[in-house]
Length: 340
Image (cartoon, rainbow, N blue to C red; front, side):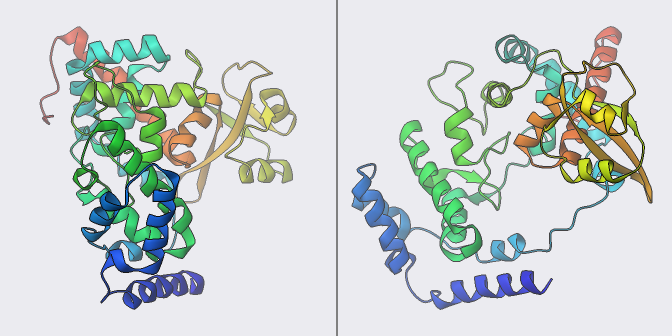
């Protein structure tokens, strides 16, 4: 806790030290401009113009330095798994069935998974963030030493994508951390994985559902998604030091199913012994932990958001949306308690 308070104080001091100086005139900003001009990717006038229009956002530094507390699974899940998101997910699937089918055919990622991701990330485009991405990335990149290198890199990526897409970098909007559009891609993710899925000549993840759908599908395929495989399977465990080690290693596929079984993990459904997997503990009620075996597709979801709770949430929302979608298809009716 003391370290968090100290970091917050240092961030605030860094910003206050420059509060009266034009952002563009700061020595570290000028050094960045010089570096980028020397690379040949940008001109000095365009960068000078950009940084002269930056509006610093010091309040987001406090958000970044909040203690990293993680809600237990049963609380985390309830924050997303609700009727509004689920029914809007069914509605979104029906409205964009063709694009979702094309994404599955091209990338191997089923519609329900893409629909779940877009629902969790932005509730189908309703909550994409209102900050100018340039302001956010510049503020963090120059006033938050702990993550400065990463966010300056993302600032450069944002400028490059603005060139590539022929847009004003100051027009791009996103979250307090610079994540953008329906899928909430950081600029580097946009450049690597966003796709022009409707062949319009422009990758638009802010207002084009087809591009958002294709971009999520492409992201997962590039991270190693295995078409037709499960995401996670319930498991029972024999408590002991092996289980403690597996829980600590929950973000990596270091073991096969057979090795997990030898360490006291029993999947509750048949799995290929040679498949790579990890052990996932989730607190389903106060003091009550249940376990899942996460497979390669589970691991892929944690590449999108490094959280086992996020990956399991995606799987459960996807499964429920799929069930409701096919029930609605058979019944011939849309859900009526929410609107897109």
